[in-house]
Image 1 (cartoon, rainbow, N blue to C red):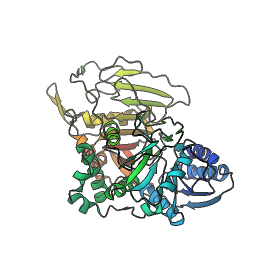
Image 2: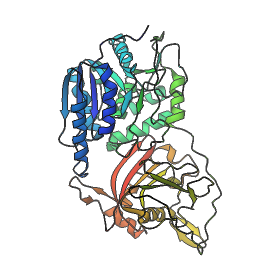
Image 3: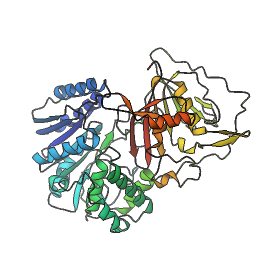
Image 4: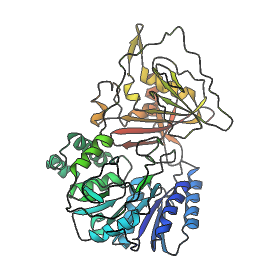
Amino acid sequence: MPLTSTATPAVLLLAWRRPHTTRQVIDAIRPAAPQRLYVACDGPNPARPEEAEKVAATQAVIEAAVDWPCQLEQRYSDVNQGCRLGVSGAISWFFEQEEEGIILEDDIVVHPDFFPYCADLLDRYRHDTRVWAISGDNFQDGQWRGSGSYYFSHLPHCWGWASWRRAWRHYDAELSSWPAFRDSGALSHLFSNGAERRFWASIWERLHRHNQPDTWDYQWIYTVMANGGLAALPNVNLATNIGFDADSTHTFNPEARIAHLPTAALGELLHPAHVLRHSEADDYFVHQHLAPPAPAMSSAIPLPDPTSPRPRLQVAVNEGERLAVDVGCGGKPRNPFNAERLIGLDVMTNQEGVYPCVIGYEPLPLHDSSVDFISAFDFIEHLPRTAVVNGQLINPFIDTMSEIWRVLKPGGLFFAQTPAYPSMAAFVDPTHVNVITEGTVSYFARRQGLDGTAVDPWGLDLGHQYGFRGEFLLVNQWWAGTHLCWKLQCVKGES
């Protein structure tokens, strides 16, 4: 059957501090013209003074861009609730007033077919308690699953989705049922794939014990899976995430494989014959995105000659431009902060823009306070904590953190993404010689209190005793699947 012009269901827009992406999301909503639009906007964090202006700008965009006749309901917070409480609270507020509807975050731009697709499936499965969610994204790389326009998964993707009050009322924000579910043996029945089982078990255990990471969607995934629910996923991608940038909470790398995925028309809507999970599609997603194989590493490291240090690079940067350096980048440096000038550093390279450096064993070939941003993707786990070179004990990991601090400008940012404990990904690769935990960062950075002052000096004091020469401020630390992410700000006398 063709996608019909059925009235667009109620829509919830989740916004915060990104006026540029929020405008694009509203531009995509406008042609569908939902008669009821709900907007929730979290408040600014007082520890980041510039954030209040961004939040105000976002709210101004909403007021100006919502220009079609509709019932507009707003839920604006004066305080920063964070991702977990802010988003889940907004969704609960939405479903207190609506039996069903669509949820879009401020970085998800959807194809026009997304709205009639959701409307049709919300109606078709309204009373079918097997189906808990309708998702708009597709990560199957062009592979068509089943005979219909969509298939069913046990994983509810949340980049553009829809659901019903009947499903959301089961949302378990605290994962209160997790210990009993974990101990019941149900995980073995839920996941035939061991890598997927370990992946989700480690995330849910961390959430239950430590309320980390600060997110809401892992709890929703648990709620759906633990109740045997299914999610409908389209066979073409109907939603794209445009929010891979420095203002994002969890998605920084604009060159990530799943960033800015193209969307396409769904065409005639064909319903699958059966409401059954497509296990092959789920397994493909696990192997490609949740637990991909580790990249190959070179076993031969040519140690530098300490008597002949490399000359420091003279990187030409025009006035007003920012310089980013990606360390341990291989042949393709990444640019998560969208800097105007980018170079890479790696042990061996023949790629333009990537310069040789045996990181951890020699100084970074850069001048003091010359770099705006540094990034390290899947790298610091390969840095030994100790090593013996020419009969002397050195600390490559600590020395690298000191060097990163040295070359960053005051206020410069360091982003790191690394597999970490308790994920198995921290151990299975034999070249992972540096096991990172949530507490590791405390030896290099202070946390920031709500009043903007630095707290928790004890770890940093120990770091200095162990040889760290510098100081960072922890802007944010979060989990992205098996990987722990840091965003640190360089603190120097001029900061």
